[in-house]
Figure 1 (tube, protein in one colour):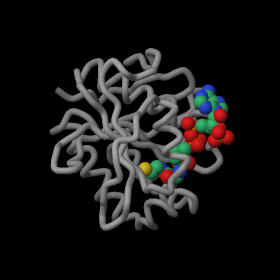
Figure 2 (cartoon, helix red, strand yellow; figure 1 turned 135 degrees about the vertical axis):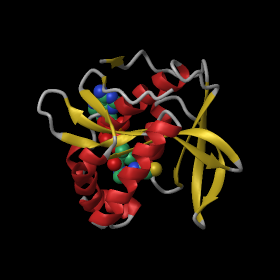
Figure 3 (cartoon, protein in one colour; figure 1 turned 180 degrees about the vertical axis):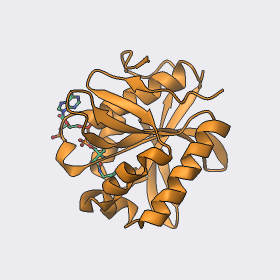
Figure 4 (cartoon, helix red, strand yellow; figure 1 turned 90 degrees about the horizontal axis):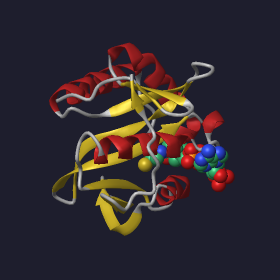
Length: 180
Ligand SMILES: CC(C)(COP(=O)(O)OP(=O)(O)OC[C@H]1O[C@@H](n2cnc3c(N)ncnc32)[C@H](O)[C@@H]1OP(=O)(O)O)[C@@H](O)C(=O)NCCC(=O)NCCS
């Protein structure tokens, strides 16, 4: 079952990523403070990526959202869940990336809460994973704010990453989203 619907949080509108949002994802990956972690993407790579994500929404029932301020309509970034193989196991992974101008407002935490609500609610997950480069302190802080516990260091693409896990019932998130 696909959960590809628009969701609202207190301040954000979350839209499942698909072809029509390719321009917004491309703009996000042009932001130098985001590219530092994800590398520079060409428009063609982003087009392929949104096609892959749209397919995952259909096949896996879930993938990332683009996030927009409800009040201004401005694109703040992207985030949410995806089904990813980590340490030999398929897991629900939660992530976030915001345009630099929107850091420091709690938007990544708000996207994360919506992802946890979907994971532990409609998807009935027992556990959610999140991982980032060991020195990505801002991303690790989001995980800790959401109640994730550090599990161990892992290797992703030959780089050291910190793996965090959050078990069902242990999350500190209040209900965050309403489907529309
Ligand atoms: C990782 C990233 C998304 C974190 O963004 P962020 O703005 O630091 O995280 P949050 O949205 O949770 O905001 C937390 C900050 O907002 C503040 N804040 C303000 N209002 C808040 C609210 N309502 N709720 C929570 N925090 C709030 C917090 O105090 C905190 O401030 P601080 O960093 O000065 O301590 C951002 O740095 C980013 O996009 N980095 C580049 C991409 C990236 O690295 N992605 C992760 C790869 S795995």
